[in-house]
Amino acid sequence: METIIVQLPGTDQWGAEGTGSPELIHLGPGDIADFGRGGAGVRIVLTDPGISRRAGQLEAAGDYWRLSNFSRSVSYVVENLEGAGEYLTVAPGRLGAPVPFEFSRVVLPALSGTAAFKVFAPQHAYLGEQSVPGGGEQTVHPFALDPTSKYFLVLVALCEPRLRDPSDSALPGVGQIVERLRPLASCRDLTRSAVNYHIDYLAFTKLRLDLGEDTAATADGGRTGAKRTRLASVALRFGLVREEHLALLPPRATAGRLTDPQEAGA
Image (tube, rainbow, N blue to C red; front, side, top):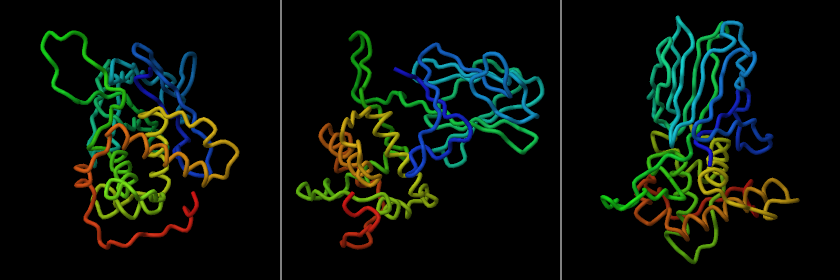
């Protein structure tokens, strides 16, 4: 099972409707990937003349990753994409700096301003139950979800109608989820593409759903609808989203149901 996933530069719309899949590198514990302008062994290419041919290295380790800065003069920045401005700086020459973020952007100074690529650590572990001293090897939870993350808010908003009324078979569309979450300070810039990305991340990386023929040979709306339906079903069936999680959502302005014409019939 991979420890980290690297999304290569130039593929920022992972999960957006109407776009192709991004180019990804999957790394398991102990695997490494060099980044830089290019050369022998460089897997993450940043095409800017101001970046060294071999600028640094990523190493997957357990449920996190390390970054090495091969530059002797400039620092690199690792931004927490879920942290409202949180970041860490990796000094010149620093080797194996641990990165604790689940969603990260690695930023390097370049002649064009900056160059960057994204790193995801989907297997972060979260405490699910009290461990027993001397009880043997720790159990790894098959669905390691961070309830403080933005993707978890998307999942709660998706499951909200069925949590409030189990007989309600309707699921909110992508546009409805955007409007439901935007009152939150952390979601004021949320877009449809971002919600689609989070749904893909949940479905294929966090919950590892096998959609099979559910998404084959149908229109984009059908694929999106099948994915949302399966995602909500698994989340509710295994108790990944529960009634107490509704407190994470903003207060409902009205009791009426929104209609998203682009999602109708999805």
